[in-house]
Image 1 (tube, helix red, strand yellow):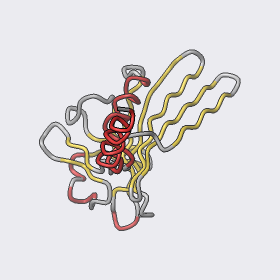
Image 2 (cartoon, helix red, strand yellow):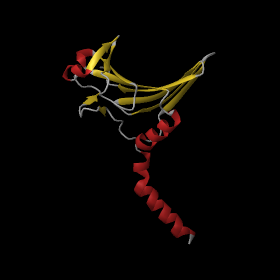
Image 3 (cartoon, helix red, strand yellow):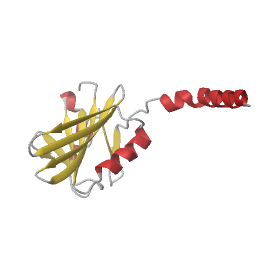
Image 4 (cartoon, one colour):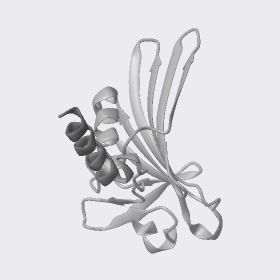
Length: 156
């Protein structure tokens, strides 16, 4: 009886093992409210009319997105999008967001925690060969803010 059970478990493990252990490819495209999208590596000039200059980044114009207070992009050489920043402020639950991303992206690649006198910083991230996605929680003087960043690792 124990042998049959062991064989059944072994068959299931062999059948599902590669799927369970696989790293899921991280998303590189974000759909915005007007049906358009923003993708890592894409030519920024194609969608620049949706953005306004904010320092050394470009901010998506208000009304074109939901779920974040602000969405900003960094542009690299050849006007290719190299990072997409999502600023949630205090409206996003960090732990719930991490759990949701673990369901869709799999086990996190890493975690960093730093504590200073009046600043606590926590970063959880997922990586594949082309992309890195970070969830960041920052607490300063009792105020908590959450953000995330999607990076193109190709060195644009």
